[in-house]
Length: 256
Image: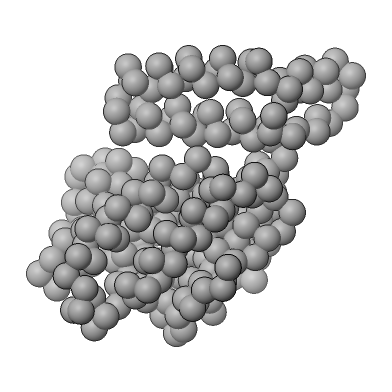
């Protein structure tokens, strides 16, 4: 499928979704629609076992919503919030390779991913400074930043409109690691590739169970864990995993 605002590449079992609206990769309404279509495609593709999201160029991962474009789309808040939640609910491992600024909706997109890594560039900033515009992070940022950092730290960042450099973001746990700019995507791809070699059913089950806890609490999380554990235990991948362990070799998982 061809896209106007995105690039999609596949490297073995890892898909790379690149936001492609130079120079800042600001989110247009068209981009939201295309990301939704891309997620449909990548979710249904059994050959895709991990997803990396990044941005074109070195300046910005994503500078947030294109304000001029948003004026023409009064439902953009609802659409963006639902779409970033869909990223949060994605059942394959998602990595944000934050190659530059991640502000507003761009930061919120990174927060929706399972893992976040940032280029070690002191000029790059990450944060949700919407209060400076008289609005709030409306694509799930108030929730996901609080989930990740705790209420007081999240409110400090949002209310004071702080923009953190990569090292500051790493120090408080907003990102999981920083790499030299030229090493960012190769390192993230390496981690995504390593996860893509794990048993797909087990990886999905762990994500589903963790997500059920986050969204519905421990009771529902435990129910999901029990149900998905039964599926994994009776799978061909489980037989392969135990067989490979006994034979002291690397398992070859098929997702069956």
